[in-house]
Length: 326
Figure: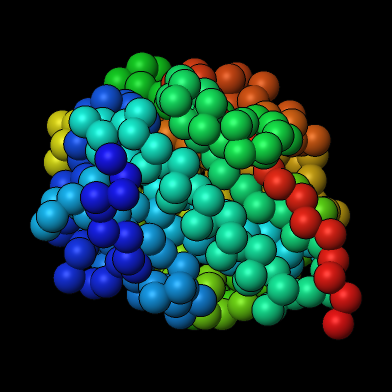
């Protein structure tokens, strides 16, 4: 019974227990998302996260049986976005633990909205994988409604790769250069300014989640320059925990973008094809990426032409909160 459990916040010494809990859940949920202790230490290192208020741990004695995190992502197109994630041990599902965690998360998300951005509308987001039926039912029962679909796509690097298309003579392709990192950040913000869910990243969040992440692979990331200015970029990643558990080396193609005035010139296709070659040459087995199913640039079709296939689908379920005034 949930009344016999201890409910508190997560603390850093819980990290090994969280790793074990997520691994147990993954053996049932099969999302292909794995975490090790360094991954979670990086998660806790996000300065915007207050673990004492933004997390929940559920324990049965000394055993962690459920957890949740509330993460404020910031303003997106004038809307304050707050994301929720968590899990319950498969042996303890159906007892109301997940319902209790979600209730705490929703309460905290509403409080964050009131404290941080009361003059803006807010959007609370949970993104369950479609095949995780219990999770989908849970968020639906809490009154969240589906808004957007996302696809994890994969490509076998042992299959013949597409040719890397050429670019115009006014464009130069160069490796990612740390000296240009802030320029890349600003190019990302500009390229995705009108995209659904995109955050205008400052230096701190950019460094933490992107080029400062331990998963980032600068040597397989590329930039496109026009007259010395970054106009396109492709940032790549490798998640060690996935390889350890699955036994498959998978190169992630993360952020691919082109500034508005340079689109429809084949820059994105060139960068992705180049990244596939880089991952293959590094000895990786597979390439992967995720894509917005409603993207106005037709991402699904573009990636399908490059040999990617849909592996998993997830849906953003949301609750909208009106502005509360100042």
